[in-house]
Structure formats: structure tokens, C-alpha cells
Amino acid sequence: MAVVEDELSLVFSALADPTRRAILERLASGDATVHQLAEPFAMTQQAVSKHLKVLERARLISRTRTAQSRPCVLETVRLDGAADWIGRHRQIWADRHDRLEEHLAALHAEQRHDEGTTP
Image 1 (cartoon, rainbow, N blue to C red):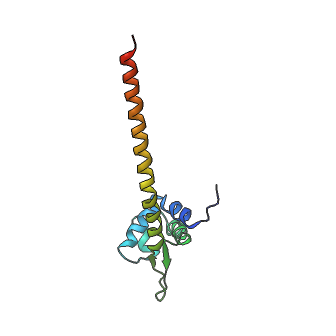
Image 2 (image 1 turned 180 degrees about the horizontal axis):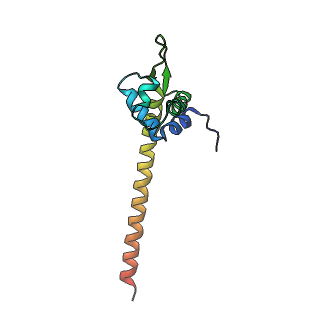
Image 3 (image 1 turned 90 degrees about the vertical axis):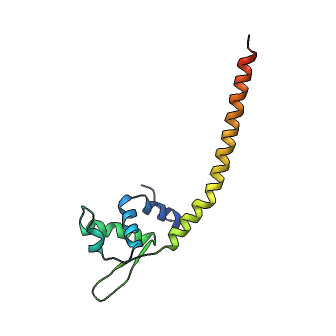
């Protein structure tokens, strides 16, 4: 398994798992404890804690301290960074797709032209 270290890779790696995405969706509606986050999943609190560590490492969440409780908090800065990266590259990909589409259309037109001139 490759070692993932840069911030963007950590974010995308964390987002690759559906359980972690569901946890982030839950935290978007407010802070929650590990117990609260574990409730909708058919897994142990320990398993949820492992997912939370991945999210913490990617700095998508943080944990605060309230008396005996350590609620998790969504940190949107890294999500914003990932969305910015996607936005910057979306136009590049769209331009490449448009150029490919134009090239394929030209090839198809050339092929039709060649078929029309073949005896």
C-alpha cells in the first residue's frame, strides 16, 4: 500500500470510504460524539473510531473537549481545498473532452468522405 502524505491525497483518501463520507454528512448537521456517530452503522465504536482517526489525519474533523465528552467537529477548510482543486481541473478536463469530440467528429467525417469516393 502506498504511503499517502500530501494534504490533498489525505483528503481524497479519506473521502474514498462511504462510511467516512456518511460521518462527514452527519457532522455537517452538528457536532457529535463517537457514540452518536456509531449509532447508524452496523459496526463497533472502535471501528468508527478508526474511521475518525483517518478523518482527523486528513484534518477533515477535529475533536473538542466538553467535560467528559470529546465531540467531533467538521472542519471544512480541507473540503474547500479539494473542491477548489476539482474546480480548477474540471475546465481542463472539459476542454480536453471537447477537443477529443471535435477530433472524433473530424475522423468520422473523413471516413464518410473516403467511403463515398471508394469505387
